[in-house]
Length: 293
Length: 293
Image (tube, rainbow over all chains, first blue to last red):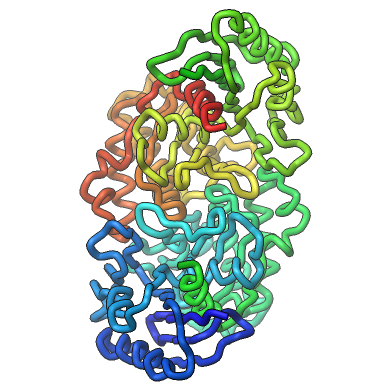
């Protein structure tokens, strides 16, 4: 069986792994994201050091963004306008490909995670589906006819505009848009709005109903624009188990019976689901990118 | 050259045409939409009566919706849950295909119009693009990698949720959602909010700035989810020429430099454009559906 390398580039840490799928990871490492030079060298060294025992045929990279996915662009493979200091304009895919002399697959972390869910998780066999993560930020990846969605750039679903709750005086925390979905509903927004760590808010705190209402509006907009066959929603904020049922009911309320698809209306528990792949989803997505080359 | 039949099924009128493109329509007719039995028979009779002079190899149908586009469904080819009396559950594509003994292409009016713009209009060569119409309702069609977008159902972009203007007391007119985009910004919403026919509102009336703000929020959400390479925006409301520049500026304001694609940021006049094909866009889209079979 072919083995692949996967690199998940996160703003806080990198994960590198060698394997062919969730039940076959033969080596794995995680390290802090520091400077681009140091961090990318550590990633490359990991694969080199394993080269004597594990031969890999390609590497996939699932990166925080924004990234350039346009193969005709001079900066294809770069992280572009990230606010993360030092990482703006870094040629991640080119560096890894040159150093390891291997073909490299390249996409956003969320598109790659969507791909992993499609390959091994809750989206196997679904032609159109969306993966959303709600944590420090809100991001979304989409597969259409089984391929990660790219257009002018890549989706930035977290930044869509949604109606404010009329009783919510919190201005939002997105540095670009203030009260976009991310600005109203990411983890830091919950903390700032209630001046409490989210994990200290009890299950019956109104924070969760409000959070679910915003997320449901975002999911409704995704249904109205992309019409996915399923939505997988994960990330740190969604670990609060009271939230998922509220989001499902909120989505049905927002759609108000306009989209009469049985898979949605009659089986919302199977339409909006948690991820299947846990903490390894990102690096598994990177491996799935390599596998597709 | 092959000739194709096209049927544009509108809620008010049907258009049938025979041809191969915008410069080659050899016969065309328009008639009022009455009962399904009568209207569909009139459409079929049009093609039969022309059969001696023009041989067509396939028919495309671009229909008001919602419609069933799922080829594995027992009701593929049907208009489904439309509020239009008598048209709920009508097998449009099956009837036409059986009566004319021809293969039939079938899609929404907006997806078909998007296809026509891709084939002959302002979207030639663009892999991902969105067509929006703002009139009695608001609808959107999308092409991804050149193909009309279908998922669980078809997009219903007009029904996405957008932030209300805090000074806008109008409750919205969507029978399902109240103040969704369509409920706030379709033609009837303008008329009801200002208690004036839109065509009687002067160019400097605040109605147009408010309208542009809502439409720009909708377009921003489309950019954040679908990331199209261009947006074509048409329909009766957009005929007011003061509106398009306001929508363009509003879109840039809503994106707030977050999406740094030159094609958008540096050339908004080419990114958001009017349709190329005018009143025939729908029936040309139907012909394009037939051509693709």
